[in-house]
Length: 265
Ligand code: ADP
Image 1 (cartoon, rainbow, N blue to C red):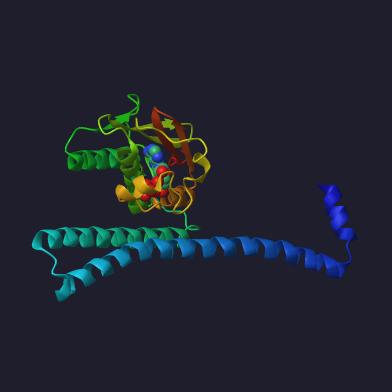
Image 2: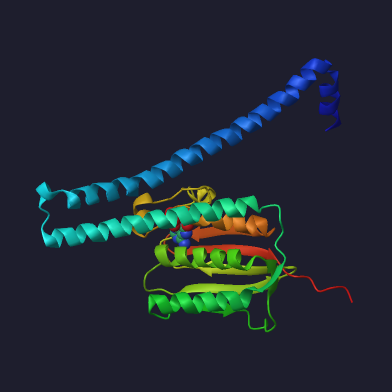
């Protein structure tokens, strides 16, 4: 307010500069700490599968070890699984940095979100081999739901959310992808009937490498980056991300994206 401006202006000029510098330095320290944490976490996540790959391959290559064929086959499977984990991790890290680099460029492609969700739902449902995925759209919504976006990133966003719903949802209950419009927004919801997320975890889920249950996430092949990627994609599209959950009932992730507005007549 006016009062604080007046107070600052009463500070001698030299000290005023050091005040500004202090504010800047504190902000820089925060960014720098977040960066250090991120590098440390990423290194740890990369090192774990790498150590395991080296260990198994060393044993397999050691003539003294005389690994029996059945066990060797198991080792190969583990090496492949860990190598795939590394690959996913590197791909997710690259996605994150690409999205971040583009964060100030508003994407200009016109995307039909309904059609995209339908296509992905169909593909993933097919891969799962059951009719688990339903893409529901509001009945009134017959015309395409156009948003301005980056096709590849919106595809990734929908896939990540469906992927989580499948990973953490009830294995026999369907996952629902719903789409409707609200004012000037397209509202996409991915709903699962899993065990839900404890409220204590909710605020942190979009942080890089944050997992409410690390063992379960890793066992399901999770990198802990999926929702961080989703958050960055939503921000780049000037949208809004909301995660709500009821323990024992399931979770709903809601993404709001601005609709392409009709040109003035
Ligand atoms: P991960 O690769 O671990 O799935 P994400 O960034 O996609 O990483 O999600 C972060 C964490 O949020 C997950 O580890 C999990 O604990 C929690 N989570 C995400 N989606 C769901 C969901 N649909 N139901 C329950 N927990 C979820």
